[in-house]
Amino acid sequence: MRAADRLEHAIEARTEVATEAPPPPRRLRRTVFWLAVTGISVYLVFPSVVEVFGSWRDITRFSVWSLLAMAGLQAASLACLWALQHVALRAKAWRPVIASQLAGNALAKVAPGGGAMGSALQYKMLVRAGFDPSASVTALTAVNVLVFAVVLAMPVLAIPALLRGGVDHKLLDTALIGLLVFAVASVLGAVFLTTDRPLAWVGRTLQRVRDKLRRKEAPAVHLPQRLLRERDRLLDTLGPKWKRALLATVGRWTFDYLTLLAALAAIGSHPRPGLVLLAFCGAQVLAQIPVTPGGLGFVEAGLTAMLALAGVNAGDAVLATFAYRLFSYWLPLPLGLLGMALAPAAQEA
Image (cartoon, rainbow, N blue to C red; front, side):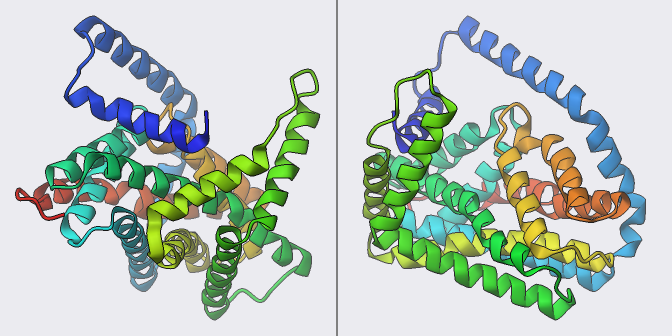
């Protein structure tokens, strides 16, 4: 089954709960199972969470302006995500898109297996607002695929910085690095979306790597062709505004990455941006682990360790992780209530 199909089926499976709820015993067993998995996972990563949140006393190392800058960067990241969903849904009104995203995002950060549940809530809110159910599933699937594909591709941008070596990391340099990441990622994304040969090469490379790692299994076939088909489906969903969608996706991750760089710069830590980018992308992959809501604990432990490998001393790594997660994970939670309050009662699609 293709990746996009799996995502689509996951969304559909969650949304069917509203109309065709499973029998109570089955639902109870599933709930108990996820709570058990979440509880064990939280227990294992609890020391990392405590260590990160124990650094709140050092929040005074951040100036008011640096905190405002991080809040502004996260607001810009959210705005880019709204723009992407607005294009994918081909919506006329912004209010139902923003409200449903805020509510779905908040639920995804607190519920076990949160990603699918957040998508299900957003889907139900969009349908209630007048969006076509089938088109909404397709749009949300396309958004998930594009967002995850871009963050998986971003580590490639770290290679030139790593080869170049050290850089003078002042505030202006941080901003310029962000602009460079945005520009290069946008160009690469446009190349993959408009030409076949680079994407086919990626497919062949992944196919060879997979076959070498799994020599005892049957070799993979037609992976390049499958990637091209998924790319074409994505473009069909986004329509003629795919360039705007691509820029919004790149902007969503660029502003998020700059939030982490700003946190490091605010406490006087200036590691190589390429290494920070690798740490950032690794943290986003850890956030996809479904056993804790929003990757809670896994992200804190992983990001702290990866920043330490990037040359940040242990104390600064913990404090920067705390500040980054404060703005990217915790502060958006109450915005979920705002999203529920903003949800339109009438159809506005």
